[in-house]
Image (spheres, rainbow, N blue to C red):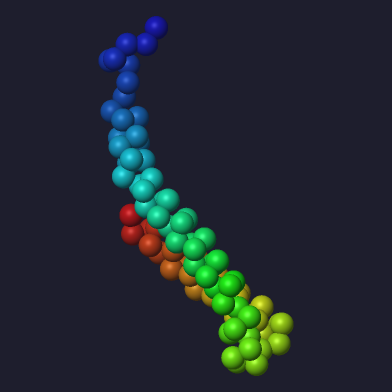
Length: 79
């Protein structure tokens, strides 16, 4: 049988931390997906403007993903 005294303070601290971090997790995921969507929609015009081959476009997409993945990783570590 569990009573109120059997709950440790650490478990309530974890729940409190989750309440603080969950909005930031949702924010980062949402803007990550939005960023990728905008970039993928604009890829054909970027390729036409800079006269890129399909392999060049692949490099641009890869660099974009690495840069923003690194940026979101640093943002996550700030919290």
